[in-house]
Image (cartoon, rainbow, N blue to C red; front, side, top):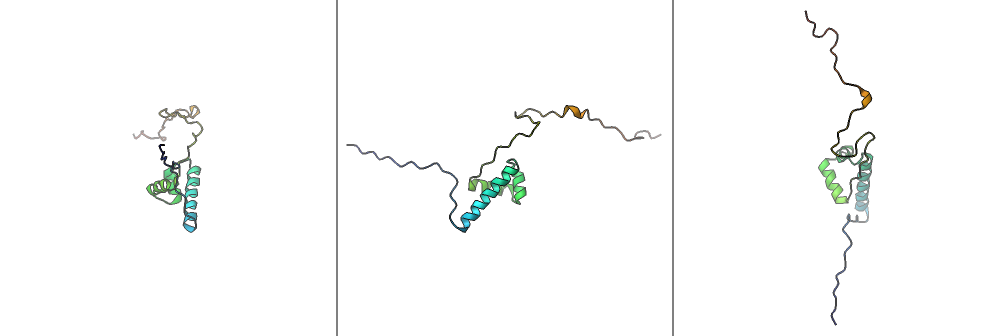
Length: 108
């Protein structure tokens, strides 16, 4: 009778569980702070790093280490959702013309 040696299937890798205690609490606090700030700033990592007083590259490293995903940014009102489409200026803005100040160019 053949014996099957099925290997146990490991769960998919996710962010590492923070260790219990002080260091785990600090790690969890950092992760939540980064997630909340990213959400508030629409997923903009550069502005998030600036708001947290971090270098952008260090923020990216922490995000990878803590398993933080960038939230999907909502499209601002009036913007096209298709990439590559130019955003037109408002129709009511009118043409932009520069008018010289009075007396300019009349040196006689």
